Image (cartoon, rainbow, N blue to C red; front, side):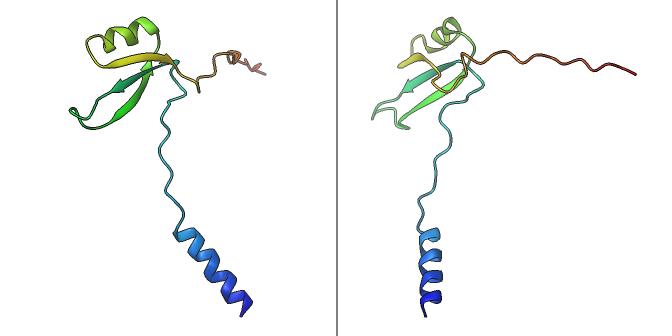
Amino acid sequence: MRRSFGLIMTIGALLTAAPSQAQTFDPRYPICMHVYSGANGGGGEWYDCSFTSLPQCRATASGRSASCDLNPYYPFNASPQRLRHQRGG
């Protein structure tokens, strides 16, 4: 009896789990544009993390209701990958 109750509770917990959201920030790009579209524009607000520099992002955001920010998930302090050469034998 306890075993079936535990099984039912486990299945119930798995079926009622909230769906997860997609990742907002793309860690491959250092700059994100935060686009605001109010109640009149519909669609809410979103992030476009596809920029490699602030001037590039600002040029795209010009004339729009948007701002450019640093991507909090971009590894700014990561050391660059070194290429390893294998010796041919």
